[in-house]
Image (cartoon, rainbow, N blue to C red; front, top):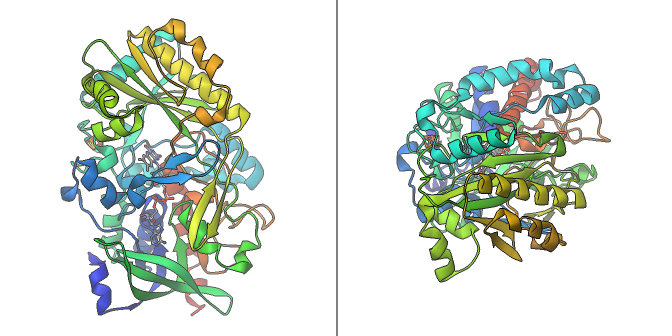
Length: 507
Ligand SMILES: Cc1cc2nc3c(=O)[nH]c(=O)nc-3n(C[C@H](O)[C@H](O)[C@H](O)COP(=O)(O)OP(=O)(O)OC[C@H]3O[C@@H](n4cnc5c(N)ncnc54)[C@H](O)[C@@H]3O)c2cc1C
Ligand code: SF4
């Protein structure tokens, strides 16, 4: 296992490999591991640090700055503004995610097949999904790992006659410790840190950590490597300039950072699809207080989803969170928050996820990405409906108070107050959202006119430069995205491996 840290760049500032992979999250780790196993000399470049399972801490003040980009405080601008979180560490967002491991809903794969051909449909992508699902042990939870918060949700859905699906998760012997978003302390969650990255190391890949890629090396019209800066892990100051040469570059820095790297080049910016089609599957939180102990922290954070309203673009999910995150996400200050948090044992936390109806855009200014996204009138109506449905379910199960994601209606205490939601929510500005699913900004397609990369993942306008992350999505996928990202990255890796001789001949 060869891992470089920022302090190592003081003596070594030039590297080379056949394949340079930028990012080690869902997409990068899969592409890099499969190519290393196919015999390529692979080097990963990762802005974050290498933090093994033994280093994970349940304390947010320790974990968040270590594992999250900008301490999890970045915001997508729009009406309303949407805070978002992404990982910055070896394993990327998979280290801090909830582990849900769903394929796209079949309508999405049918659309992709109709528009892009057989290889993007259910059957064409099946071998890549299978490879990924086997590696990350995608399966349902053992009953002992399910907590009472999930049981109450499931019972409520059954009572109301709504379709409830037990989650498929990337986990092997999950004990339900409910620490997924600060790094799984048992190694059960199959983030790429414990699945694909070890496979890549086993096959000889190297990893340059604490190194942020700022530029591409473009020579003779081809991408020939990247240039970055060592990032001091304590001060986050830029340090050494490091050059990494390669015959192929795969960008897998996520749907916000990947377009940001590409948008600095005028020749690439000309394609207006770059940074466009920004999808973010926004999410609104609903927290309910029960008159008895639920102990939501015992058992997996997300045991299931209500898919009854999927056709309307609404998914309802249980999603319990550690105390510090809960305190930050509920309303009020001081005593008011303390009053809610005193009852942490009696809370259930859920989310309303709404499928994107109109994409936003990622642009670049002063070297930094700017994400913009406005929810539509339809999205707004869906959020109001989803929040009301969740509140109804919780009152049905005996909740005594439901905390709402609205700045002008922060809670209600009985089902009689449900009509207040429609009455008071006239403006999108009072809706409080959050997201962790950013996608679509370098979409795959059949021509430069409607996409940024071809179906092999290679940029139309920069040979030798590939994308293998959430940016690839042609459309939203109707569910949690990581398995689709991994499957598309596996497809990109297979295409590159299939043309090995041609790529290596470009030296
Ligand atoms: C809290 C949370 C919960 C989630 N829950 C789920 C879930 O349950 N199921 C699901 O399917 N999805 C979930 N997701 C989403 C899923 O994890 C992401 O969609 C997925 O990991 C994105 O994959 P990616 O390869 O595009 O980017 P990432 O996994 O984010 O990886 C990108 C990597 O690139 C690195 N990087 C970025 N810029 C640079 C640069 N300039 N130079 C070098 N390195 C760089 C980053 O540090 C990072 O390691 C969740 C996400 C979060 C944050
Ligand atoms: S619930 Fe606990 S054991 Fe299971 S994956 Fe999450 S952190 Fe790991």
